[in-house]
Image (tube, rainbow, N blue to C red):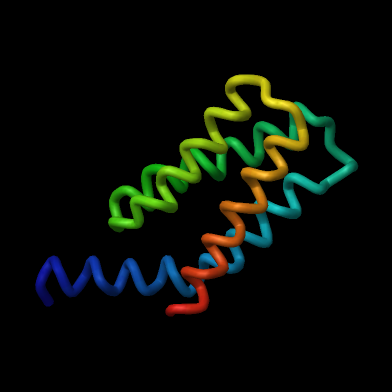
Length: 100
């Protein structure tokens, strides 16, 4: 199996799990049993991981949206701004999941 074929398989697996990732991110953000700082950390960690994965797998728009979410949290953005980024990123993830 060639490297290109392996990468295609990894991309397909990522796409098939993208909807689950969207759901987990939204749940982390909405979890009212956690403080805002805890929710920020969970969501930021997910976004940070997505920046790398999306870049590696050649999903530049997803990488950019993930980076923007990460920067919003790092910059101390208001909850509404972070929520908008979370929703947008979740929508992109679900769209990827629908093409798998």
